[in-house]
Length: 171
Image (cartoon, rainbow, N blue to C red; front, side, top):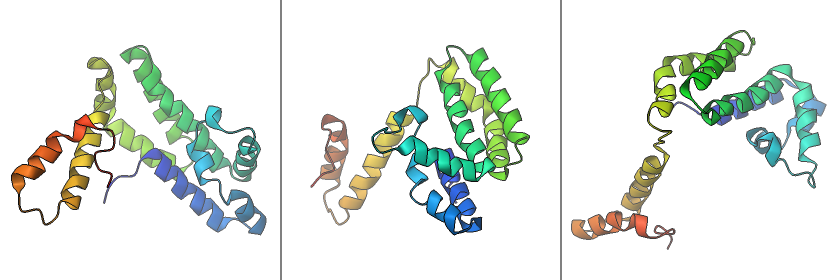
């Protein structure tokens, strides 16, 4: 089974809290999944998202802890150097382990096991594999769309042309 990212684990925690809540709690938590995934500075004031999120977080302390720790985790990749990032990562793991939230403890163990890989981001001038992973996903999608093609050379040309256009897989 694929390991879920932090946002998906946070959404699962919200579902668990909703299942254990009374009718008022369920009503308050309804529709807050996407609010939990947003960073606080992306909340839309006109839609009163900040207030709705605060009401949901006040219902359950573990959910609030997990939400605020998400922003702290994001800060690891915004550090100027590896030492600062390592300090924040170690601090985050320690706080997650003593939080009393099972989801955070499990995620902290995962981060601890991948610590050297996470910090390697700073060893290689903040190089990310995101563009490569995106290209691999496009190739897999193209392969699904090309099911039944008899001409392998045409498929190879389509793969090579993926980077030339923004909407290569449309239509």
